[in-house]
Structure formats: structure tokens, C-alpha cells
Image (cartoon, rainbow, N blue to C red):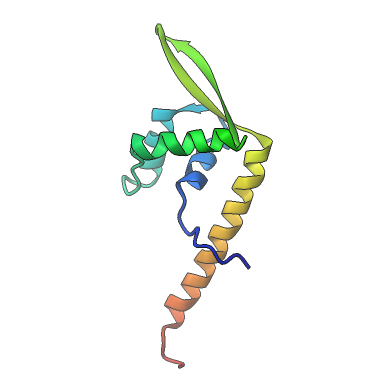
Length: 110
């Protein structure tokens, strides 16, 4: 059983958004914000270092696309990143299960 606390990782959210389609930076943050009903807002100062870290580990790749005479960087989830995402999801759901167990049980049976 993993002992590190990964209950909430931006990496997992970013990779999840890239699971089905390549996306550019602003689009990634907008989707996360929208799907979390505005609860989770990833600032550029957090997102881009995370994206660069994921690129360095070969979990994602990037490509430049010219859109309206401006260059947009699109990010793509690589197979290695899919494996890493599955690990993050498995750990997340394990943490969620154990936290729910503690919260629902309370301390009545000590």
C-alpha cells in the first residue's frame, strides 16, 4: 500500500484532461475549472512547471500549432503518461476509500 499522500495532485487532473484529446494550456485550466464548478483553479505559475515536469518524464509531449497567426502549444498524453495516470488514479481512489472509511466510522468504536 502506498504511503505517500497523493490524495490530490494537479498532475492527475492535467493528465485526465489530456486522456481523450490534445489540449493547450489555457484550455486545460478552463476545463478543470469548469468541471470542478470553479472550485479548482490552476494558476499558470503552477500549471506550466507541472507540464514541463511531465514532459521531462516523457508522460506528455508538446507540439506547436499556429492558430490565427499565434503559436499555441498543444500537449499530448503519451503511453507512459497513461500508465502513470492509472497509478495516480489507483492511489487516489485508495486514499478516498480510506478517508471515507474513517469519516463514516468516526471514533465511536474506540
